[in-house]
Length: 200
Image (cartoon, rainbow, N blue to C red; front, top):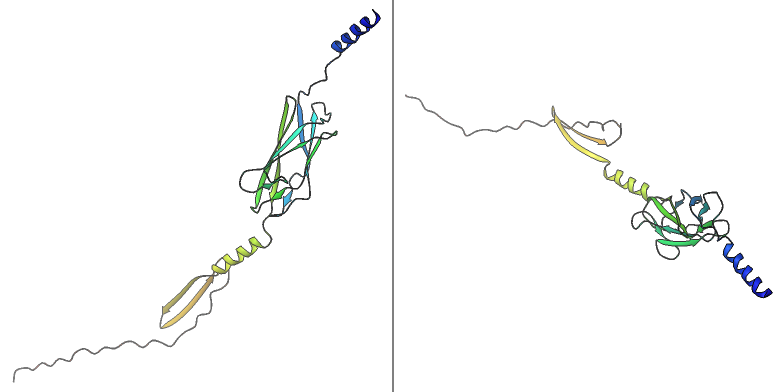
């Protein structure tokens, strides 16, 4: 009888005990790596770290955090070779992503970050940058400038003088000096002679 009473009491306590509280609202915040500038074709040494908390600010361990890179344009790939990676938050509610391999397309891109735990969800974005290739922009600019250096070459003939004037685009440089040439003699032509004989 005693054992039966203990068993009933244990069952009642199990039934009456409150179930673990479910997470109702998640909050996500990027705490490291925001605005990072990646060298083209290089693997990042700085992690992107997010913090997941409840609405009260309490850390949420065991939340799944997925990171998503853009399909085209500036961006890259994660260590797994894909554009999506999933990390589980630790006891402090932190999830860190390491080793982003940047592609060679310069510009700004965003990493979409989604967190989930039970039925709760949260999302944010982290803006990142792929830098211009070293010397690439300057070299291209210099080559273009070299092609545009001489935009006009004109010969001016006035008063028997020939001048060659060159202008440099985007520059306030004076025209090249006018170099006079020997005067051009007028061209003479003699027509067919005609003879007319009057009356005697």
